Image (cartoon, rainbow, N blue to C red; front, side, top):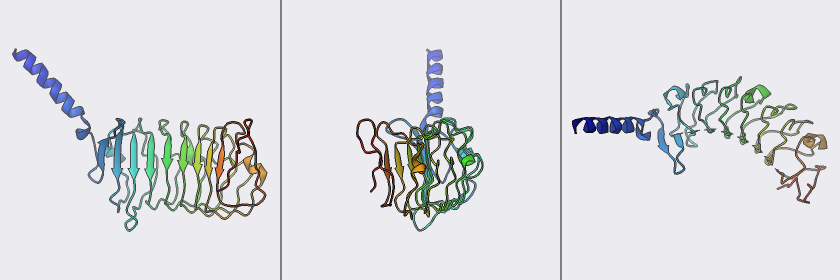
Length: 236
């Protein structure tokens, strides 16, 4: 009887230690398990400064969301600090005064499917920023200060389906910008300064299935129809 009780007690202790409420969690964040059973860390009080406390995160974290109130933005930089988060699927860093993405910050985190860096101060985007994101399906760079994009800058994101670059400072797109983005379905570019776009810009986009381009009014932009007759480029 005593042996059974000891075994039961040991099991209860193990369950308690492994429970979400006892997982690693930074003091400035809140950690929970979502309704779908995903481990989520939310840091939205504002006023955060470097370093991002990734060393204090549970290795099983699947969603990391960092944001701030409009009146108290964070001041953060992004570097290769996420490698131990082998199950991380979504990374949201908003209102954090991020000026650049950095060299290979996501290398070693192939589980990432969503990267959201909207509402920062990013001015330049380079192809090495996205190395290692082999399974990324959504990239959000809205409300930054991006002025130019190089040919093939997103070429490492071969699984990308949603790309949003709204309300930046873009006034043109270079030919072959979407090189190797054969699975892209949604492109949002509204709120930029386009007057016209070279048809070569869209040379690498898919022409089968439903594919949408969403952005403000421009002149001389190509309209295509896919095999089923669905409009591929929708201007809003």
